[in-house]
Length: 238
Image (cartoon, rainbow, N blue to C red; front, top):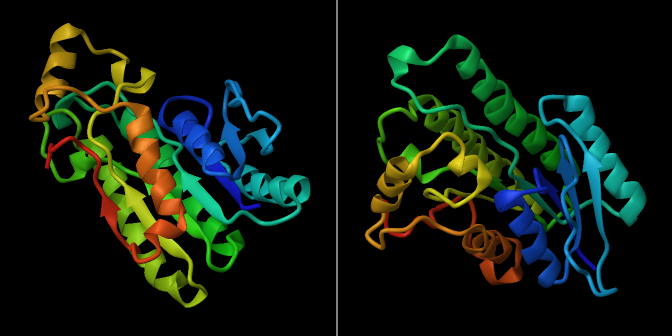
């Protein structure tokens, strides 16, 4: 049985990833910050356990890996670096220093902490998948600081893919367009939601399960020749 560890797996895209990986036969561990959420119905087939971990803390990230080794009896075969935040959109000139620092600490430093421990702990032949955003490649007013924080993660992913290739560890990123989650809807009125939907020629935003399906594919042997890539499930946004 293979084991997956999803950082930020209690809601939204992360929770959908937990569900998809369970359905694909993984034992799944996932982390949360404030509440564990609802573990999927496993029907007695796989194990699924939740751990509190703030990715801003390297000690808590390392402890999550150690807990998985202890509770599941092995290091994870798949690590999903999904934890992240956004702040209310605003022109760069109006973005507060505190908001930008929050993005850096969670989205960049947090991803660094997870990816570093993933590199140290993933089993040979395993997979590492980070969540970023297609908005890195689509200039939208008001989201520059958020996109910049995710662009940094893509740089880490590309370098890590070269570093771990000798161990046959595949490293990729999934960069969705707008996805219908609580995080996406926060602070958006009807007009803002319509504008987000209009970014796709299908005139809608994505669903968490559609992104999780791509993550699950990358975690599987079906993606054996996909490495060092930024995969963009975004409905034609870019």
